[in-house]
Image (cartoon, rainbow, N blue to C red; front, side, top):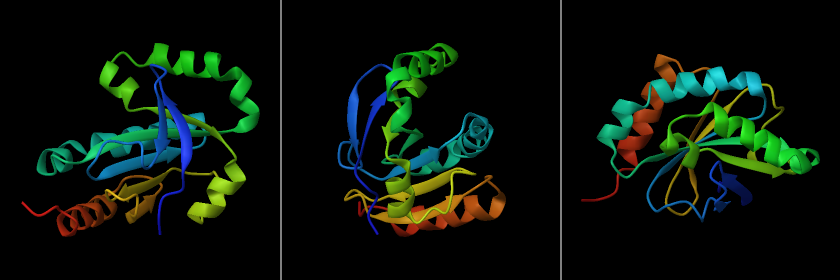
Length: 154
């Protein structure tokens, strides 16, 4: 299964087309749908530094996915997020997507927007691993196994 094509912008205003417009290498994409899910995203991100260190080709992307109806409010929504994130690297890796949520959910076989969904993508956008909800030891271990088995040849 391939990650669907969606348009997004980082919090500095640069445009991306996911997944092909992301840098080469493996990408971990954390998709959140609601403001309160930031705590779940933060939980994932707090458990990733050792995986990132062991997998130098891995980049991590947070993708808040909002419905198209919010697009007119993008300057305010993105501006609020930008103001709340001091670290420029985090702002550059936060890609807001104002998209057709029903289509996105269907393409990813997600039943609803009640939790976060995490995807490990290969260089071609293929989904190599997925998880959802809170980061726990089993999910992190499963992700680590997927990273080890998809490691590029040296």
